[in-house]
Image (cartoon, rainbow, N blue to C red; front, side, top):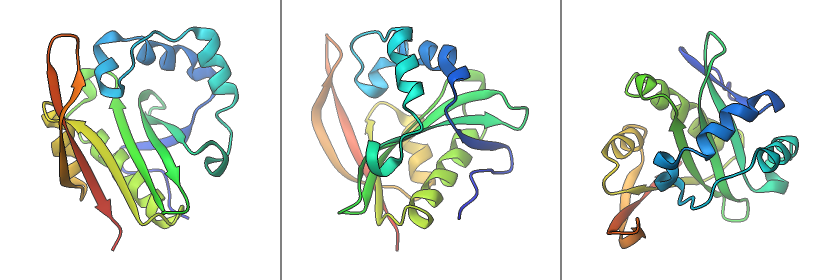
Length: 174
């Protein structure tokens, strides 16, 4: 089994104590473009989600983990979504909440841990990500972790004023 602990961070299951952290991320309108969120989430809904977060990935078809530093501070979230066991693939998304913690290598380490987990423990053949053409930091992060751009979805996202293109990136376990 692959360890979910790296040199500077570790990944852990969500706990009921993560309510305020998840609530603040899900309701930060400046981050909504990353996940196509369009409405706020209530604490009630997030509390229900956290209560059911122990569901097995094979049942829920998704897995959300907290990214923590070695001082046990929660810095972000990393997700496996659209888990497709038949085709042995899943999507991955990541968010480091505080801008001061970005570009410090935490996201790169978290993504590597999760990709290794997907390939070695879940026995997936491939993982993928959907990233806005304008999100250069995320594109660099995923490409540094073995993901390749395989397609460009034209005018994929609309922010109320303009359309943005979105890349589909893929990492195949060879």
